[in-house]
Length: 310
Image (cartoon, rainbow, N blue to C red; front, side, top):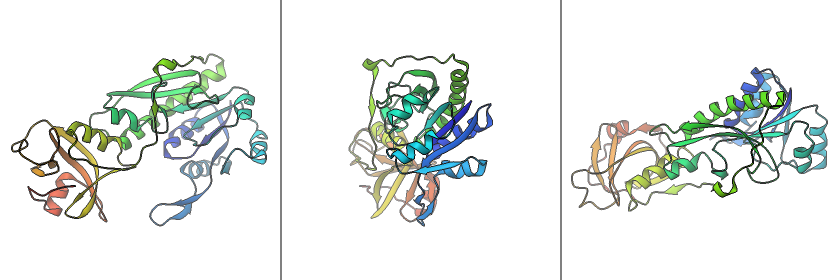
């Protein structure tokens, strides 16, 4: 089956590569325009464009699909189905309706749970122990199309959003290939979503830690927003990005400590008092420095019990 692949970020790479290795033929890739990336802000292709070029797949770079000329170029390509993974743009109704075997989307949640912009972050922020991947036929709604296949994915203990991103990208890629096999064979299901179970995951933004919150809530925030968009605090006047943490219910002196007090040093990090319990930061990045483990932070920066974070 001839497949038009549409995607942009790193999350889409396993899907592109798995389809390319399968019995299906990726006839072209549609992705976003090149733009400045990284610390040097050099103009670079999207991860999907770079991978497609390496694989020898024709690439079409677009800023929008709204233009008549862009749609005409896409529709001039001969394809049976569209596979869309994290493309980030609205798909015109004409493309949805005129693609012979449909436009199939990979979504990193168990739809209808966590529709929207941040389905990877949302289960971590909620403290869920299970998430998953879904393939669906796209319609004109936001993640509302008929379901094809779903697969549950346990959330590993201590995983942050970056870890979960990688797990779901790989599991989703395999599910997408299975889906394309079913679509080609004419056995793909079309299961309407239960609107009564739907929830929405809005776009996430970077956060500052409020140490008066319960420790478990702070840990969920750190894991759910790391490494991007990030959760920050301030230590000795220096901005600190927190990347991993764990919660402890009790510690000596915790009841009398003001929230945000560096209360203890552990083998894996620094223990900070909160509104309820202790948060041990186990991976962090001091502004202008590299990411370090909590143990490396203790050895290299020599934090002292009693110091305050804000």
